[in-house]
Image 1: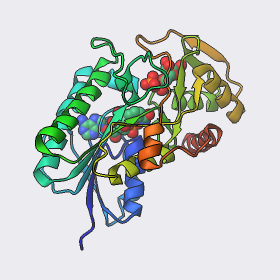
Image 2: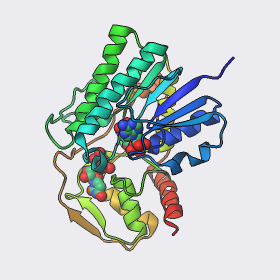
Image 3: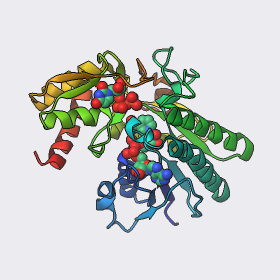
Image 4: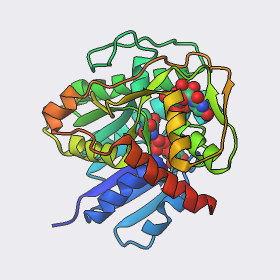
Length: 314
Ligand code: NAD
Ligand code: UDP
């Protein structure tokens, strides 16, 4: 019997490359599709020699015709700095990308998983956030291209499911960190670690009282795989993230402590519409997928710091 053929869009990015690693190790035929907007060949370089790994340079906003059994749709810049660089393209990636991938799934009868986000909850009034919460999103702010793009993608996924019987899965990913975040990515964990390792000031936006809940990449990938392989009557959306909530100030202090850096903390203006609190309710993932994160923040940060030390050569 031939191996399952699996497409990972955004496969050369941070999460996508870790997902490709796991799928290649399991022996599946893996096709990584990426236009390298925020992804990096270095992330998947080690896979290029594997006979069950293939790389395609392509932009998901344009149709593509390939035969696959499963699709993980991850293509989309995730860092606010990058998704706000070209907001129109960000909406296109989310909406046209979803339409193209759902069209492919429908044509070849493939199962398809969407990497959605906690950003669909916007700046939430409900805490922690449950999947049943509809969110509080500004439709015309600087984050809207991403938030509304991802919300529309979810709509498309459920409409293809209801109208065309496409076998869908939707996961809402909360802030995830780990090795292979790019060093100029602008997200908080990579920014703080790099600043600490270089002895530069740690840049906290606002007073640092805003919170996030950080999930280590290996835990997140395990959740995504379980969702794809989970029961066909469970389409989601399901939250995947770590329940441990901490302020950005506490995160900065923790990273200074773990790196032994001499960096000082400096405060910069808080970006517009920056969510005040964010923490997933993962009861549904625990119940339906038997999933919960197992990597403590300190341990995940140590591994991530180790990675950045090796790429920084320090
Ligand atoms: P990333 O920026 O490292 O990876 C995204 C990948 O998509 C990159 O390799 C990029 O080159 C590729 N890409 C972008 N536009 C494309 C296009 N038009 N065609 C083809 N490829 C394209 O980000 P990530 O953290 O790995 O995120 C992966 C997915 O998970 C994204 O969809 C993101 O929205 C979602 N997500 C991530 C997080 C997180 O904390 N990492 C949280 C919520 C949701
Ligand atoms: N942040 C910060 N300094 C940085 C980068 C980010 O204080 O150098 C803050 C940012 O304002 C937000 C939080 O850290 O409140 C998480 O930002 P990130 O861009 O990682 O993710 P998101 O805002 O999308 O959750």
